[in-house]
Image (cartoon, rainbow, N blue to C red; front, side, top):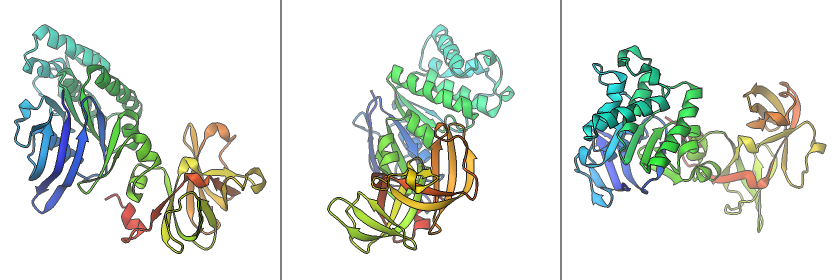
Length: 372
């Protein structure tokens, strides 16, 4: 059964270093998502594992066997690329059955498996169609069905749900995860969608410029990001510049831009040190007046609503704080009768334990958070 180990892997394309001293391990039957911006090295890493590219430096192991130059066909892997790569002269059913037939499965069993995968992808009614007759999203589902039909024990997926509409994308992500669990397959799934990664993976590797910036469970990547970039990339965070005003035994007092003070549970920074405070949007609350907030349990800052958006199960408010900083609050819709109007004065409040603190980056906050 396939486990993967990469040790100090480097891959260059001319002057560009796509993978830069990357090390990670993926356990047998684990479902890992590679998450990162365009150009971070996700697809290159997948191709190295698939055997479609060879590392310039470092060692790749599959089941503890050296695999830098192991032929792709000996890796027990199936690679589903973004480009679909369907055979234009074959029907949809024949395309999906191709993988099992190539692995010397009987024609009857290959066709049965192909039909089963097409039904799962909601394409059973298009079994006799040619690829050119399908939309891009349908072709992507056929490519995914073909990969799953091989019953390989190492599944490498490059944006497998990228061309699908939002509702189908959500439906298939859970089917894909369930199928991986039932078949005991090790899965590496490339995506740029944070919600998709957190929904299906056992662990997430966040990549930037060919390096892993965090490799952890979805909970830890979202709730305890190891860097400002990770906090920003996984989405839904507010960033406030501050200076440490006082450091106590169990908490610190930070002074925000132009004076407002907040309390945080982090005591690892010295007085006068510049820091950045990160607060998740769903940890930022708003009240119409200060008397509705327990100021002993929460940080409170005055603000004014700048915009309101209804997002179905949530309402998003953008608020300008009294010091000019902007924050976003994401509130469950059932807690609000209606979005607050633009211009309304409010109290923004959040728990000290929900404020994460990081050193102010030497390259500046905007450059640290830059995705591309």
